[in-house]
Image (cartoon, rainbow, N blue to C red; front, side, top):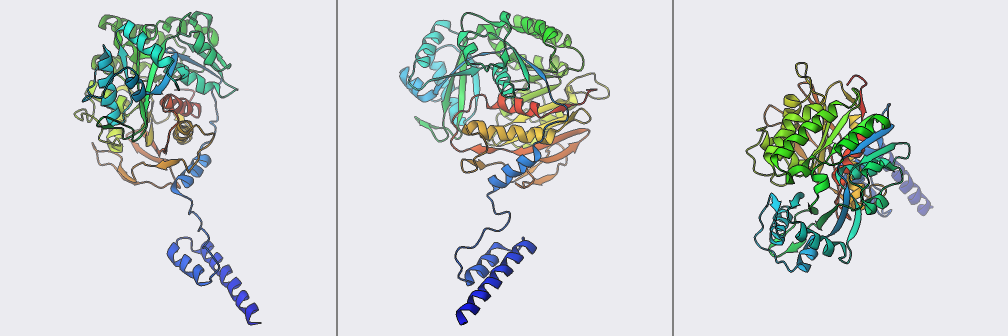
Length: 496
């Protein structure tokens, strides 16, 4: 009888503890665990909301990410496309007989030694970079060794092709890709990507992607983050040879979204050709029917004059921009924007500084009541967080868009179908200021409400952390996947 009474008491107490969980979820976990352990009923149950921060954030994203009311049907992308040869940077440089020196950036690579110096310079920072290799013969020798290297992998490459490939994963979308498409690239492309015959060529353009892992060491250099160094001797993309094919294809294809990339590839061209091509780019964009948004995807650059020209000539002609932290700071330095005196980011880019630069771009080069610019949206991404900034009244579903872009970063880097919370970590700043050039707000990160929204003079900002893959399988093309996913979930108002 005593045993029965003891069991009954334990049962009632267990029921009481359950009620406490429901009625007082904020009660300290230590108090609940102490009460439970006093019953000697084994390990205490997890209280509601005790999922890991990563698990709570991923669940909150899934609830936020909804399809826009009006979806894209036909997307045209151009004009850079190539084959990416992906392999270990340290192993390739060792195979080339190179040793790690002191590290030094080069705007253009002229030799194997330049390649080694630039690679270790960026590896030591954990930063992505892309450079032009000027010597054709040396590049082809290195490319052949890389392509045949054990473990080297061949992928769709070039921002336009990668964005097109990501869009093509949605079977209800029709995707047009214009760029220099050789036989290997054509073989790698999704069947849902249509390439006009004028874009096909007999030889592929190869880009070499030298990857390194977080913590990987070479000499006295140690990578703080996993990332990659990209280089090529790519004349077709460098001259934007497919621009005219791209524009002439739009009339028949009739897209409701256009994505343009590859302007950074012009860095290997003369100033005169750069000026000429930029004017042709602007003229080509102006020929796209009114009401069709144009997204411009930027990439790593070193030529300040070219970047400044893009800012002043091209930005007002496009509707949307996609860029990362290196490109954002370089843009501000080139065009005398906020925080331009900062030589480089010190670790994680400061959210307030990033927000100030995004605000400046949209205020100085975006649409206002007094300026006839088309630019109304910027999608910024860095390793640990993303921000979408939009001019009010032009875009919808941006909470879902920024969350979708961040979610796909963790999925693609880990090569999983959904977020695997055991393989990702939340590394975004727990607190941050929304601005440093004005009296910004202090934000505290809450994984249960992962998208933070704030407003400044008619511009809305949407911030979300990224669940960073601990051991990434592949870092190449993440920015393109992020921009494509953000665009896929975005809705532009008809009067934009």
